[in-house]
Image (tube, rainbow, N blue to C red; front, side, top):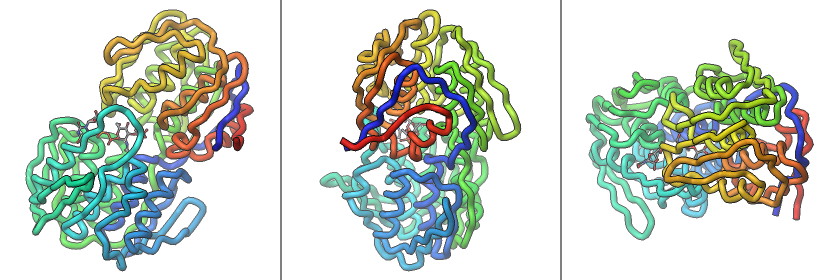
Amino acid sequence: MEYLLLKGKQQINGTIKVNGAKNAAVAILPAALLTRETVEVDNLPKITDIDKIIQILKSLGAVVTCTGKRSISIDSSGVNSFCPPPSIVNKFRASYYFMGSLLGRFGQVEIPMPGGCNLGPRPIDQHVKGFTALGAEVELKHGIVKIKAKKLIGTHIYLDVVSVGATINIMLAAARAEGKTVIENAAREPEIVDVANFLNAMGAQVVGTGTDVIKIQGVQELGRAEHSVIPDRIEAGTFMIAAAATRGEALVADVIPKHLDSVIAKLREVGNEVEVGPDWVRVKGNSRLSPADVKTFPYPGFPTDLQAPMIVLLTQADGTSFVTENVFEERFNHLCELRKMGAKIKLGGRTAIIEGGHELSGAPVKALDLRGGAAFIIAGLISKGETRLEGVEHIDRGYEKIEERFKLLGVNIERRQQ
Ligand code: EPZ
C-alpha cells in the first residue's frame, strides 16, 4: 500500500505547468471509437483513469500506439466488440462514455453501471433519457446496461438536470445519428467544448457547446483527426488554492485563465493577490484571509471539484465561512478527516460551516475520493506536524504524480510504500 508523507508548515513557491484536462481526455479517447480511421490525441495526463480507458480500448480491439510523451494514436478499424470488460468499467465513472461512443458506432452496447468516486447518488437517468429519445431501447439487468437501437434518429432532448456526462454522452451518440439533435439545458463546461472540437475535427457537426443549447447534425462517417487536450482547470485550481492556503506564491502556467474566473474571483475575495496573464495565473497568498460564502454550481459557477480544497483554505480565514454544495448532494466525505486534523467544521444540510482561524495539526488521514484527497495534501502542508495520507490511489486517478508536482512547487512530500 502506498501513502504520502508530508511535513507541515510548508509554503508553496515556484512555477508549475498544468497538464491536460482529465475530464476532457476521458471522453475524447472513447469518442475515437466513432471512426474507423486513426486519430491522434496529444496532451494527455498520465493518470490511472486514462490508463483504464486505454485498457478498455485495447480490450475492444483498438490498436493504441504511444506516439510521444503525452500522445497516443488510436486505430479502431478492428474494433468488433460492444461489450467493455466489467472488471475495468466498474472501477471508474468516466467509463460511461463508452455508452455513447459504442452506441454511435455499433447501435448497441452492453456495459456495467459505472463505478467512480463516492459522492452520493450518481444516477444516469439523464444519459438514458437521451439515448431513449434518440431511438434506443435501454434495459438494466443484473447490473448490466444494455442499449440497442435499430437506428439512431436526431431529436430534441431537454435535460432535467444539468449534467456534464449526459451532455457529452448524448453528443457522442448523436454525432452519427440520422438528422439533427438539439440538447437543451446542456452543461457548459469547457471540457464539453473540447470534446466537441475533437468530434468536429473528425468531421462531426456540433455547434453551441459552451452554451446551454447544443445542436448536432448527424453525419454518416467520421474520419481521421488530431487533437490536443485543453489544460486541466481543476488541477490548476488545486495549485492556486494550495498557494493561497500556504501563504506562498505560485505561477500556474499553460492554463486558459477564462476557465478559472470563478476561482480567481473567490481567491481575490478572501484577500489573495491574483495576477492574470494570457496563459498563466500567479497567486500570492495573503497572511490575513477573510471568510467567504462559496456555492458550487455547474460551469461557469464555482466548481464542485474544488469545493474540498476551498474548505481547507477557509479553515485559515479570520471568521466563519459557508460552503454550499449544489452539484452532488453528499460530497462532504472529507469533512470527517479534516476534523481529525483540528478543523472546526459543522454540516447543516448541504452547507459546511467553517470556523476559521484554528491551527490544523498533522494526522494520519485517508483519501476517500479524488478531490478530497488533494485537499488533504493542502491541509497537511498548512498543519503543524506530519501528515500521513493513505488512499493515494484515489488521487492518482486524476492527478499525475501529485508528489512530484508539489515538489516542483518547493515542498517536501514523499510517496512511501507500506
Ligand atoms: C463530471 O461528473 C465530472 N466527471 C466530475 O468530476 C465533476 O465533479 C462533475 O462532472 C460536475 O462538474 C467526469 O467528467 C468524468 P454530472 P458527472 O452528470 O458527469 C446529477 C472529478 O473529481 N445527475 O454533471 O458524473 C448528478 O447526480 C469528477 O474529476 C443526475 O441526476 O457529473 C449530480 O448531482 C468527480 N442524473 C449532477 O447531476 C444523471 O443522469 C451533476 O452530475 C446525471 C447526473
